[in-house]
Length: 248
Image 1 (cartoon, rainbow, N blue to C red):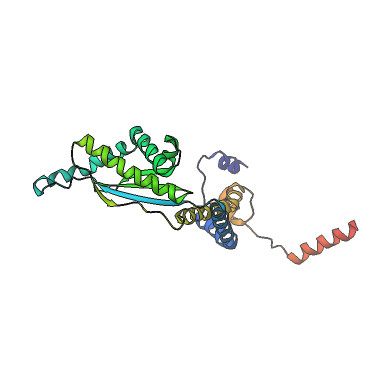
Image 2: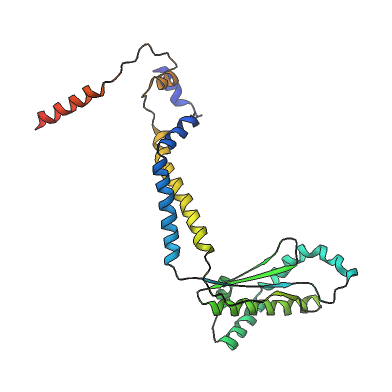
């Protein structure tokens, strides 16, 4: 009893990783089922949602009149690119884009709509700004991405007192919905399903403090086992059947 009490008062919990791995391997079919179920549920949820279309545009923030002698300015491109992203996400840009989209395409938007639709990022180690607009309406996604590109270029030129940045890629109207979300969410769902199913078996294993085997006796009581009495399954089943008959 003293050994058991000492064991219970220990703060460090010893976990047999090989035994835990063995528990999971014996349940590999259930783990596979959890993985597939998670992927199907997550992918199905995304699939039934309205299709989302994506339109992208790019500008190169370097004046067309830049000479070879001034190319040293490109070295500070990474730092300036962060500034350009902030400029592109400013309220004056949003307001101008809202006006252009409403006048040319008839869509009425708010700043919050633009923020939800558009992402602006600077490509690593470059002075290229990438504008990505996503929406259920492919024409609206195109209109916003194209307007963001043009208005941001004009604003950067005005602030930097330089020529307009060069357009690398114009926005286009997407003909097919964006499928990246389906794959991503299906992968995440599969991982979550696998983890949940694994926890279903891991938690009972970790919380089980019963002594079932001679190894448990040696581990918890720190004493050797003198003898092991095997259990005859046939006898156990016979006793169960007799109990059932007596109840009947």
